[in-house]
Length: 359
Ligand code: UD1
Image (cartoon, rainbow, N blue to C red; front, side, top):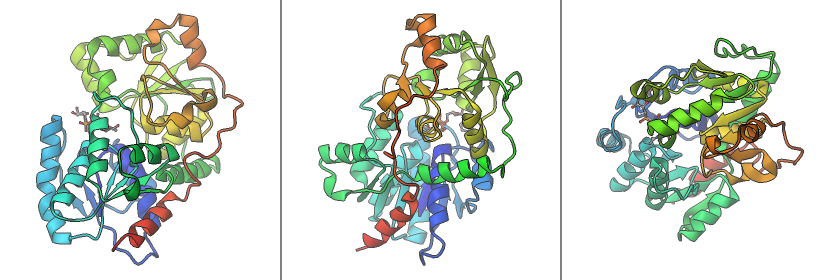
């Protein structure tokens, strides 16, 4: 039983769901409803060919406690009815933690996909969710060697297995389809010409959106860039900007809606570079060979920093304008990237490992 609810989990689910047919195992999909906007949920099911969820809990938005608690309460009868051999939780959202806690309390085996990632920033909600989920789970499916080392350092080595990253499976599959012309061109924000250089940007982390002074400074820094910045705005960003009276559509910044996955991949491929605070997009930029600037002080994906493919810019307003321009508009480094995230067949391995650990 897969428990998902937020956009990045749907990308990972796409890889896992596609690896089930022919294995003889049944796969039940539970959507918590954490993300409910069509842009953040439905387009991923349609665009990535994910089977419709078997169960939808419809919990929606709320404070951390309310949202996590609502998922937890709603999952009990679902888990009791299905009694799955494995409950699979993904990543680091409130839906992840609720799924893990619900399963362990009902004595169901729980596996954590994307285990072992750490920012070591105890103020991030995602860091609480990851650490607690890893320590609750019976089986830890780690995407990288670095994640395996973190798990070992926390005494969890004997429950950990290196599977590779399932996001690679999907990203490379969709890249090939985009390059082969099997998808329509992405809809970029008005004012961004796909034929001219542009930067692709997203900003949605609570630590960046919820402090008005920080959000205003980040938007101002992006507004000063010498090329158009296509800002694909998450609803959280729109909501916080409105609340704090911050204008997003300013200077170089052009605001558009979040894109479906194939549109996002095409938009990254068409961009000169990426500016983001998203974990997934840092890695997609890396896999697709575009330089990334990350608006945070740390990353859970340190492999992307090697050779300068990804650069951390926690306080871009502190850099001189030339320095920030140079970071955000640099070209792809020469450094080989290698395959620190695996070979694109992680989902098959995940199902195999779950089957092997049934007893
Ligand atoms: C969640 C995850 C974050 C992940 C992100 C991906 C947690 C703690 N955070 O953050 O790790 O990177 O998903 O997108 O689980 N909203 C809508 N429509 C929606 C969903 C949200 O308008 O469909 C708005 C609401 O104002 C809501 C706010 O966005 O209060 C935040 O949503 P929430 O699900 O709490 O967290 P995300 O910021 O999406």
